[in-house]
Length: 533
Image 1 (spheres, helix red, strand yellow):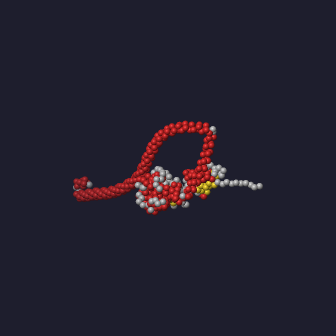
Image 2 (cartoon, helix red, strand yellow):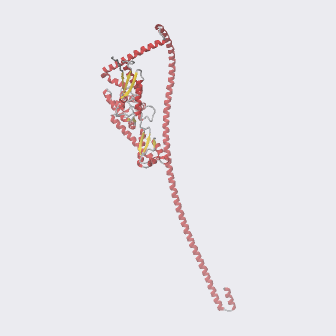
Image 3 (cartoon, helix red, strand yellow):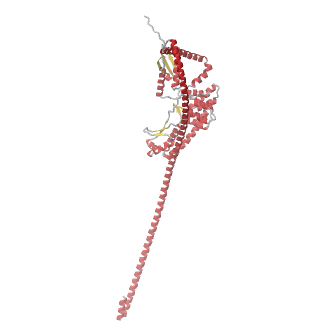
């Protein structure tokens, strides 16, 4: 445009040139303004785009921060849950390890005791073998000398009597048998007559000596307890996932839980009655609470154990107070409470001990002995039954050793160890405890007996009576309280019948376990029959 204007100016037309120059200037200014506006628009757009990009970047950063915060919170939560689960599992494992450690320690103690007992028995056996070897040599020497003397006497007797060895032996045996039977019958008759004449003077001593030979067996029959369950769904909760709950319950309580098809009942089996009672109460509380899991099981069992132990102490104190026995050691009081959960042939052992204590006190007062000491002997005579699940040996031996360690009097220890005839009675209270024990066990309703055991006892009585020579028939009558024996009148004399009754009664005492006493009646009848024609 400037070039055209220049040409016009060169051609000599100034008006057109000015117009052209103005137009060119206007066009240049417009173009510059347009370019400037375009530049300004582009810069504004770039600024808007940059601001929008900054805003999007800021939003992205905020979203990033929120996501990181949420991820951090979630990770922290998962970490806490994992640590909590790990701590619970670690606590369960630690408790199981402690339980296993206690069991191993207990087994180790039992094994040590067994080793000591075996070592003692081995030493005694070696000493006995040495004594037997020495005695055997002496017996062999004496036997050879005796054989020589017997041979000389036998030859002399055969020469004088002019009889063979068999004939002389049969004759001697027959005469000796007749004389022994006659003398035995006379002796029994004389003893009974003297006892009847001197009944008032010798009654006390005769009763004590007779009862001292009595011994009764003891067996705990109640080893299972049942717990009512509302539904089969509750049985499933007791078992738990893959048996977790029932295994935790059995480990914690030391019992066996039986969940079978019996509707509405779960059985608990254990030979320790106290642990069985703790398990029964714990299971009832768990069912009532509804929350059944290993941690809750441990809490319930721990609380129930404490309550049962407190109850044992209280029951033991009440028993001592009822029996009027003072000054008992705290451990003995606790064991008396444990007897509350023991039974013998259906008879509560603690109530049996209180009865024996009362009877011993009455008999001691009648014999002008110490009634308080007699009641103490009677109350503690079965204390070993509370420990027979924790130590080896009979309840008499365990109870005597336990009371000896706690400083009980010698009379009490002898009564505990000897009331079943295991050792000799060295104090007058021991036969009193034996008598009271037999009275309490044999009173009506005191103990129950199964039908099989009852029938077996009747058969034993009849077999013993029928095994004696001259017996034709024998019957157990009066529910086993009497045995009636019918003998052959031609083979058994009147005086021999007395000896036969005594022999049968003695054999029954030695070989049969029975409550109370058994009467033996021997019947001998002679019938003379003749016909008048």
